[in-house]
Length: 111
Image (tube, rainbow, N blue to C red; front, top):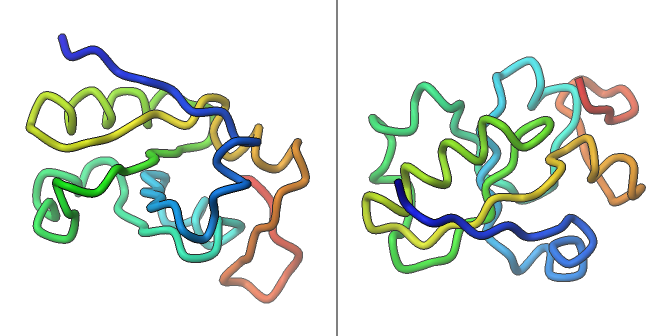
């Protein structure tokens, strides 16, 4: 099992949009609200879409609460990628009132 690191949303929020964020939530979750500039690859598609990720760039992996992103982070690190888990996920991001956008035209929210 690979050792994974965590980053908190407040630290990450100060680095956006420069930080590379990988959102691994499902499509409906992404559409309801996400971090502008994030890359969206649902967790089940990660192995097939690795070519979209730069193994030399640190990825900040996020989901709704941190469970899925923790597993993806562990897998990415074990496969030679530089990745950290975003502790608390999009729920913590929303609670910290950090900026989000939606694909629905409605007020962004974590679903």
